[in-house]
Image 1 (cartoon, rainbow over the protein chains, first blue to last red):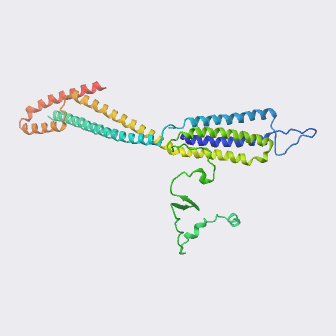
Image 2: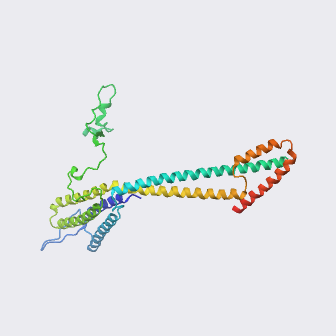
Image 3: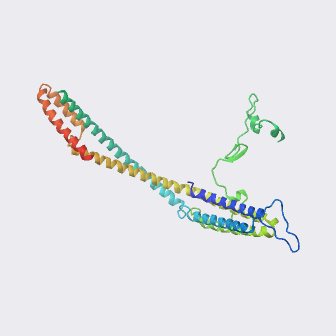
Length: 138
Length: 214
């Protein structure tokens, strides 16, 4: 997953592409309207869509643009840490750094204790097997 | 251009003459200032985001008085989004009446888009710090969880060891054993039955402790 800033920049780019494709569709699929008394013009490079199809496509393009805009608005509103200043952030980082150091010391302390206890268990097991051997050999 | 199109292989990059062997040719002098050349382009070594005006683009947003406060970007961004839509509507209207007049409107839309991207890029250091904070919090949580797990494992082991009621210090117990074996070397037979009994007792305790854990 990308971060929100990249998501937002991608959404803005997609909106621009949608702008382009909407205009492209309108200019390549529209029908002609005959002027009074003249025949309807036609263009061999242009295949007009059926009026109903054209209308629904237009509505869909407009709806897509609005959805994308809403998405952009939402992403803008959820930009991380919008109300936090740089000083706040740096102070927070420093505090976390000392906390991390303390946590690391505590962690190592308990790991050492764990190793000690493990060694104790080992020696007890060895002791037991040794005395067992003593008995069986006696 | 023609020769490069008709030849079977593409021509070498234009800088090749600097690297021909046998021809003593000094490399081009380094650029003055904090800049360097790469693939025919010059780059700045200082990693800075130049203002839009440096690229000849109009800045459409007003920065807040306090440069450390990033909150102005949010309102500016939503304002720019709305301007973008309105400009697009204008463009659509224009295209239906006077399509040849489109260039200034497209230029406006381009400027707005560039401004939005610039504002977001300005936001990146802020976002990087925010991500760093999240990662550090994660790390702290992991460390604390590990400490807690170690603590519990230690308490567990201490509990098992104490229920065995064996000498807690292995060094002391081996010392004891050594000394007793030195003293009791002659009375080996009488001692072995004691040892067997105490070992059996110890065994029973170990089994009891183990079965209580299972």
